[in-house]
Amino acid sequence: GVEGTGLAFIVFTEAITKMPIAPLWSILFFIMLFCLGLSSMFGNMEGVLVPLMDLQILPKKWPKEVITGTICAVSFLIAFIFVLNSGNYWLALFDNFAGSIPLLIIAFCEMFAVVYIYGID
Image (cartoon, rainbow, N blue to C red):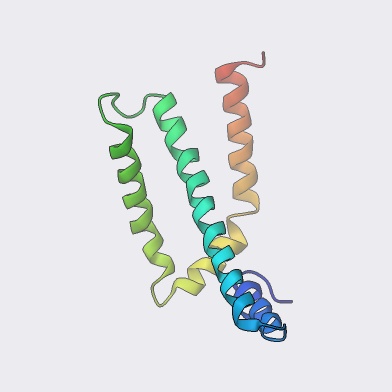
């Protein structure tokens, strides 16, 4: 079956062209995709920033805006692999392998850290 980016950009787009007032629905659909991506990035940035600041890994004298900008710039540079000619292959690689065993290992390590560093209470 169709999954991933093919579902959003091929199947749904084809279905939208069959609807009445197709141009309006197309605009709304792609605005929705943009908003979903943008809101996901806010959540991802918070997920990186909060632990870095709570654990005091970075110096306290650095303003939060500088840390946020630096992490955004690093994320921007890392994201370049997905927009190169081989980007679709990288996306398939991450999609197929990052959400299985590595994710379980990371979740176990987080659970271990919470229990033994912060305590069960």
